Each structure stands twice: as structure tokens, then as C-alpha cells.
Image (cartoon, rainbow, N blue to C red; front, side, top):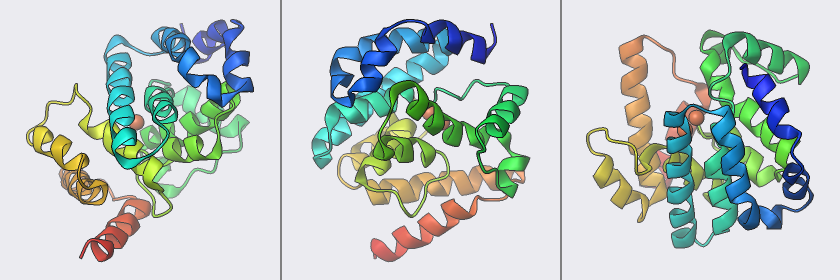
Length: 214
Ligand SMILES: [Fe+2]
Ligand SMILES: [Fe+2]
């Protein structure tokens, strides 16, 4: 079943309205949101989403942010990640989502902006939640602590196994900015390897963090 059809099937259930009506009901409804995601995402992506939810909650506790809101955002951050090229193109057109030059070359990046839009449409997510989802791939100088938590949780959650992830997981609990700087270095390395241009938002964030962590 195509992504849009899966979403429609899931949307017919009434609990969405409960979530949409009151973000404070998030805790009660996380299990329902999980059921929803299970229908939309592959098993691997679902597992990553739950891992991000757990890590986001833990980091929110450490940095004094709303734990349940962070868990919810971590859980849904990749809700648009498995859309096909056609679906991405249709969605951005239908929702007037601005697509920059780098996103045109790498459509996958758009899952962040589309995910933020879906979070608003389906769950009536707040600006804070939407921004955290919007910035979770490229990063952005406008990220607040909450958005930084989601950015980092996505990349160091329990199912990630790349070299150095354990050290990063420890660092994430002590210093979000330093963790993001190291993660951006990984992005630079990957972009160079694949011959991709770095997104200007990532470059700008790196500069800001370097100046801020001196
Ligand atoms: Fe993502
Ligand atoms: Fe992710």
C-alpha cells in the first residue's frame, strides 16, 4: 500500500482527534501513535523511531525539557521518511512547501519538512515540535534545546551501531553542542564521499556552534 493510502487508513481511527485536541494527552496516546507508525513505516524504521523516542526522553530529562513531548517528537520524526519520489513531489506541491536547490538534488532531505507538516496536520503538533522535526536532518541555527535533543537522539539512539556511537551517546548526555559538532563532521565526511554539496543550514550551524563552544 502506498504511503498516502496507509495514512488515510490510519486516519479513519478516532484517537487522532484525541491527540490533535490536546498535546498534553501525548503520554496516553504514545501507544496509539506507535500502532499508527507500525502501519506506515518498515520494521527497521519503526525500531529506529522507538529508539529515538527513548533517547529523546532520556535527554529531555537531563536537559530539563518536556519528556513526553520529546518522546512523541522522537517517535514521529521520520514519519515521512519512506515516501516515494512521486509522493514527495505531490506532497510538497499540494502543501506549498518551499524546496531549495539542495533539496531538489536530494529529495530525501524533504522528509524533515514534510514530517513537520504531517505532525501539524495529523497531531496538531506545536511549533516547537514541528521545528524540531523540520531541523532534524540539516540542523539549523534556530534550533532550541528541544530541537537539538531530537537532532542528537536521532543519531545516537540505541539501534545505531557506527564506530564511535557509544562515546557520542555519553557525550550527548553532557554537551549537546559538542555532540552536534561531531555529528556534523560525519555529515561533511559523507557528503565529500558521495560528492554532495553540504546544506547551507548545516554549514551555518557548524560555524555558530564552533564560535559558541570556544
Ligand atoms: Fe530523518
Ligand atoms: Fe531518523
